[in-house]
Every structure is written in C-alpha cells, then in structure tokens.
Image (tube, rainbow, N blue to C red; front, side, top):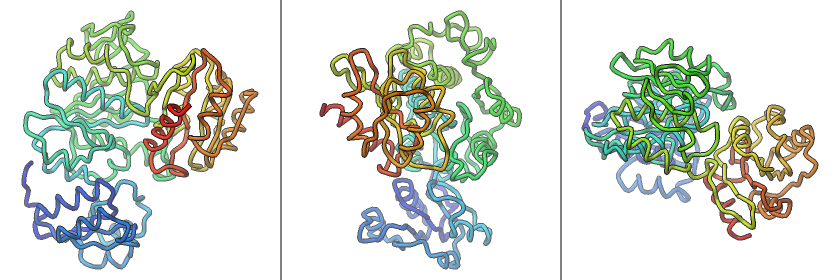
Length: 449
C-alpha cells in the first residue's frame, strides 16, 4: 500500500455504507482524514456503523440530512448505489465538493496495476476468467470490485508484482478522477440501468470512463462487433486491442476456422473450451487478449479454458434431477442476459422469471421465448412476463409467490430431457437483497426437491 498524505487533516464525508463504505471510511481514517459517515440505516440496526464509531469515526445514521453538507466537507466518497439525484449529492455538486467512489481511493493507494472490466453483460465471467488465467500464469493476481471484494481493501494488500483484476459497474465509474487501468476491457453495451442514469448516453458515458485516463502506455480491449463500443474506442488514447465473436480480424482476439486466435497465434480450438454458451465467446476472447497482454503463456490460458465451466449465478449448472438439468442464472437481471441464456440451450426449457419492476415491458424477450416449454413467474413483473409468454405462444404459464415456490412448480411441469432455468430478466430487489441471495434460495429449493 502506498501511504499517501492527500487526505491528511481533510474533512471527508462517506455517504452510504455497505462493504465499500465501511472499508473506505476505515482507510481514510488510517490516512489521517477527519471522517464522518452517514448511512440511512438506524445506528441500533447498523453493526457496520457501530464498528466505525468504536474506531473514533463520527457516525450519523437514520437519515440523509441535507444540512450536513454545510459542515465544511472537502470530499464526498459515495456508495455507488446512491444515485446522483440524491439531495445530498446534488448539494455537494452545488458547493463544488468533489464526489468519488471508493475505486478512486483504491487506485491512489495501490502498488499494483489494474485490469479493469466493464460492460452491460459478461463482466463477472470475464473478470473471473482473466483472474484464473493470470493465476495459472503465476502473475499473482488479486480480484476486486463489483464481484464482491472491496477494491480499496484489496489495494491495501497488493504488492508491486501483483495485478488487481477489477470488475467495474457504471455506478462506480461515474465516480472516478485519476483511476487508470493498465488494461481496460469493455465487453459490450446494451440498454440498462436507465432508472439510475436517466439516458442511454449517460450510461454509455459512464462506461467510457474506464478508458478516459488511459494513455499510449495502456491497452483498451474492446468489442469490435458493436458500433457503440467502437465509437468509445475511437476516443481512447490507449493502444487499441479489438476482439470479435463474428469477424476474422487478423489482429486482437477472434475466431478462425474453429480456432480462437490472438494476432496470428492459434490459442485453442473452440470445441475444447469447457465454458458453455455462444454468448460466452465474447468473454473468452476478451480474457484471452487481456491474459496475452499480461504475458500469460498459451499453456496457462488453455488449461483455464479447458477446465473453467462458469461462475456462480451465471448460467451455473446446479444439478440433474431425474433427467432434468437445472441451471442458476440469477445474475440475468435484464432482458438481454435472459435472451443469451435461452440461446445457450437446444433442449426444451422451463423458465423461471420475474423480479423488480423498472417500468419496462418485455416485448424484446418474446422471440427468445420460442423454445420455452413452460413459464413460471414471480415478483413484481410476473404479469408483464406472462403477457410476453402468451404473445410467444407458451401454453403453460404458472405464477408462484417467489423463487422458492417456483422451483417445485417448474419441476412438476418438466420431464426428462428438459432444462429448468432460473433466468429472471429482472433485478432481485423487490423480494431479495441481492441476485446472489435469490440464486442461493433457488439452489436450496432445487436440493429440497
């Protein structure tokens, strides 16, 4: 860890806790800042805040009082989940107080370089693949970010010979100033999180931040199959390294005659790759590019690709029950992710879907529902997804109270040879704290069958 004096004796507000806020507050306190923490959860129910209070950090809980912004703060470190429309955040901007997320702190103190991964879909799988390849190649990687480990905590443990492989959300990337990954990866761009960003251009702009500070010594690995991504690449100052799942580029990472290539090197035959689903080809190619740029050998890359079968909650194989194969794709929190999941199977599918209602309809899902044999819905969007199912011609549609109730219903509707798939096409927050909790409840219900 680089011990910086940037924040010494500065008055800093950490807005919102969760794991990232707790870690950021403790780090800033260690760096000599005068830290105040503000969290909406009452102190009596807030173990994290109580722990910070014991460290001598000022804690204000139970509300977000706008008047707190009048107390002379020089910086706000914001939890990524708090929108920029929050009155306290708006007041900070009015007072010209910088607002960052904790990945900016991680960058400032890290002795290790970063490989940053963002995009609408595929971030977690790509991040995990790159980490595994670097690990197999003895590059001492650490994994961090939106994947579940707090970046500013990981950065405190990183050494010069390490590499931090970090999954980055658009929420996190909106709050950077100097953050600059050695290798930046943009997997793809689709419409998402408009309830947070407001417009598609703001969402794309947030994703583009991953390369905004890069220079000619850095690399930008990008999806050459999407015009929106290419447009961002055209603005980057980094060395451009494209990948394509459909075109023989002759450079970067691409497929040629059954081989996955990097430049003119044959890395591995596609049929030897263990990770299922055509949609995973983008993730695999971007991981190959990142690993090769990091000096990982072809043998190490091949070993990972022949053994890695997927990430928990991302088209995760759960069990085979009396001839039915069961998959957990709880991370599919938008229509595109569910579409890609359905495309991965040739067998008839019993689909479990539903969740938080963000105001959209599900017409775009209708074409992908053609192979769905039966539909089990739950959550706030149950009725909307049922309408899409009827439009797609699905004859059997059942509504359940939640994921736990949907599993036995799905099993009743299935027979040997079918796939039972949880791929909700919605966020989990109407009924579950996270998509991981939703996926775990699904897995538990499957094992109870």
